[in-house]
Structure formats: structure tokens, C-alpha cells
Amino acid sequence: MTEETLWRGNRSQITNVGKYLLSLLLLGGFVVGGFFFTPAWIGCALPIIWFAWIWIATKAESFELTTERLRLKKGVLNQVFDEVELYRVKDVSHSRSALQRMFGLGTIALLTSDRGQENILIDSVRQSDELREHLRKQVEIIRDRKRVREVDFQEDASHPA
Image 1 (cartoon, one colour):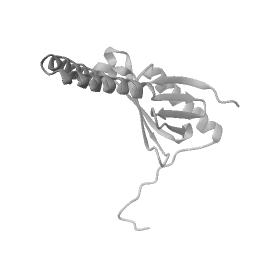
Image 2 (cartoon, rainbow, N blue to C red; image 1 turned 60 degrees about the vertical axis):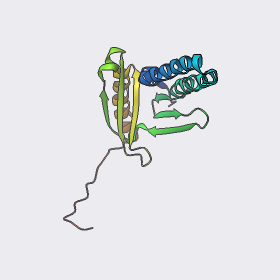
Image 3 (spheres, rainbow, N blue to C red; image 1 turned 45 degrees about the vertical axis):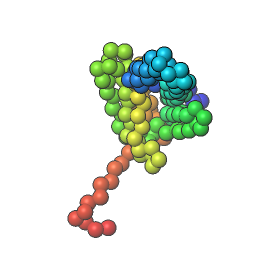
Image 4 (cartoon, one colour; image 1 turned 90 degrees about the vertical axis):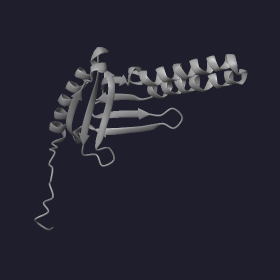
């Protein structure tokens, strides 16, 4: 069976509103300062570069859900690619803050049995309800197909090994 893409998305820029406002405030400060002290105009480049870097870094973070796995990509200069097999997903939770609800966004938190990625956060994405349902259904389908069941063992301090 071939692997198909079920959902693809990026983090929303809305999550950076505070940083963007701060950079605009700093830019305004450098502009005003430039009227009184000419070399201050050089400082205008700093908030512009910071603004651009935040925008590019957020845009570079992407998520892809396929029929077999969840792929995560982060990074601008140094990129990190991670994959989590769907049968390793233990729990899927969905939350939306007031700001996220205003813009139709949501956050998906995954608890997995993958040693390197026990907790995965898919923050501020559009169609988060759809993503949660795709994840829930596909995890069950892939577990049935691979005949995998998730079993947790709890260590009991009263019974030594």
C-alpha cells in the first residue's frame, strides 16, 4: 500500500503577534532616536531583521500527516526532520486558546511511545479539528493493520524487580 498525504500545514504567524508588535515598537524608537542622534538610524535594521527572522522561522516549520506517519520539519539554516510512526501515538489532545479561536486555529498535543519524541506539539494550525480526527482514525487503522497494541507498564516501588 502506498503512503498518501492526509493533511499538511504550517504554524500560524498569529502566534508571533507580540514579537511583531515589539519589533515595530523598537523600530519606532530607533526612528524617533534618529531625529535626535543620526547614528541611531543604523539601529533600524535590528528590529527589521528580527521581524524577518521570526517570520521565516515560523514559515519554515511544517507538519505532514500521511497514512503511515507524522512528519515534522523545523529550521531555517539548520533543518531538523523528524518522523513518528502513527502506531506509536498513545494520546491525542486538542486545545484552543481564546486568540486561537478568534483566528480559527488550534493546538494538537501528542503523547507517543517514541523514545526521542514523547511529547509532540503541533501549535496554532488551521483545520485542527480535521487534523485531530485524521490522527485518531489513522492511528487505529495503522494499529489494526500492523496488529500493534499499546501497553503501558507502571513500575511499583513496593515490589522490587
